[in-house]
Length: 311
Image (cartoon, rainbow, N blue to C red; front, side):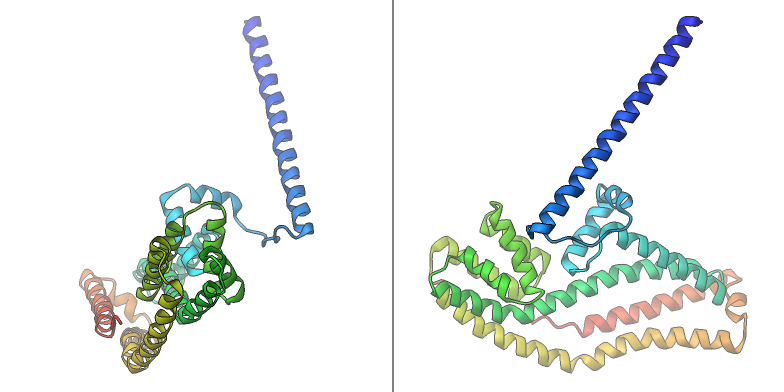
C-alpha cells in the first residue's frame, strides 16, 4: 500500500511538472509569434490583420468537411469572415428566427423559420458569390486590355498578371493578386488560372483563361488574341446589361409572389389574433400550411428558372 501511494504521488507530481512545462512552452511560443508579427508589421513586410473572434471554434470547424465547404464559399464571396464567425452568426440568427416565429405566429412556425434561416444563409453566400462574379465579369475587358498592353511592352505573362493585380480595383485586383501569389510560390500558370475559373465560374472567364493557357503553351500571339477578346467581352457585357434590364420586372415578380403570401398570412393573424395558432393546432392545418408554403417556393423557383437566360 505504501508503494502504491508513493507511486501515485510520483505520477501526480510528474503530471504537474509536465503540465507546467507545457504551459510554459505554449506561452513562450505564443509570445514569440506575437513578437514576430509585431516586428514584421512595423517593418511593413506584412499588414496587421483584424482581431478575429472565436479562434478555437474556427480551428476545430476548419478540420471538418462542413468547415472546409464554408471556407471555400467564403473565399469566393470576398467577405471578411472566417468559417467560425460565419457559422456562429448563422446559428444565432436561426435561433432568433425560431423564437420570433414561435412567439409572434405559432410554435409550429419555429422550425420552419429555422429551416428558412439556414436556406437564407446559403442563399446569402450564393448571392455574394454571384455578385462578385458579375463584378469580375464587368472588369474582364479591362483585364484583357491591361494584359495585352503589358505583353506588348515585352513583359512575361506572369509579370503582366502581377502588374494587372496592382493596377485594377477589387474584385479583379484581389483575385489576380491571389493568382500572382500562387505563381510566386511555384504553382504553374495552368493550375493557378484553373483555380480562378473554378472560384468564379463564368463563360467569359473560362474563355479568358483558355486563351491565356493556350497562348502560353503554344507560344502564339498573345497580344492579338487578347485584343480580339477585349472587343468580344465588351459586346457580351452590353448584351448582358440589356438582358438584365429586360428581365428586371420578371425577377421582381419572383420575389413579390411569396412576399404577398406571407404578408397575407401575417395580416390574417393580426386581424384575428391566434388564428395561425388554432389553424396549426391540427394535423390538417399543418399539412395545409406546409403545402401552401411549398407551392409558393415552387412558384418562386419556376419564375426564376423561366427568367434565367444564359448568354
